[in-house]
Length: 338
Image: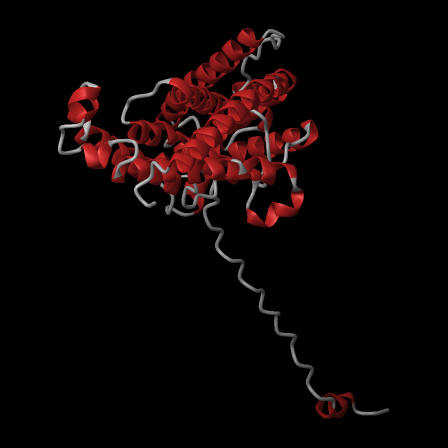
């Protein structure tokens, strides 16, 4: 019989399997409830403040001239500059004419999809309103605060157009849209609401159903009247603002009392509790806003359609007045660049 001891010596030793090195899981980073970046409308606000500030400054400098009777303006040292055909007055008129022509580009962008490369409809609407807000002050400088006849009609039409444009922007913001400006369907709004609720629940360490119950907001039956619809929109905005303030106080008290803690802080202490609370309240406000918009979508769309009907005639009236005025002025040669 073979010697088993010799066999044991001949057989090579089996290498013990080395445990495979398990890759380390990356340390989870604090999940942001809202992806923050530069506010795209901040530049618009700064530009609006600078433009309106400059125009108000010009009106303030010429206040003595503008408040004088027409007979005394001729003897003023500012007459060559501030009269409608003066250097400043007519320059303001030319800028107003260019701005007015630019305002008509927005309807073209909204109508023709092939112009999508120029920017989203929402972005064009922001620029459209920004340009229109400076028109009243430009026109007052050009007319030297003496608006009668055709000039008065054009100015009144322009003021109505500007005011209705602000109302139109308010209604536009109450229709849920994507970043590209396309109107969302009710299903897409529901999916967005669900995503926001999950983010809030994850950040606060609560159940989705509990967060949804907390954010339940009263939405009345949409009114069919125009005035009633506007009143409901204003009331809904006010109620959502008050609800957001109450949520902030409530969640802040629960945080101090230890009822819950933000999960982002349990992963890493890079996000402060105050910042996480701010983001949670912002998300909650957005969720309530989507709920209100979804339930009042039909009434808001009707108001927006009525606004289009009322906005267009005044815009056309202002355009006719501007064309007639410019034609007469150029025909008579009342320009300083002739």
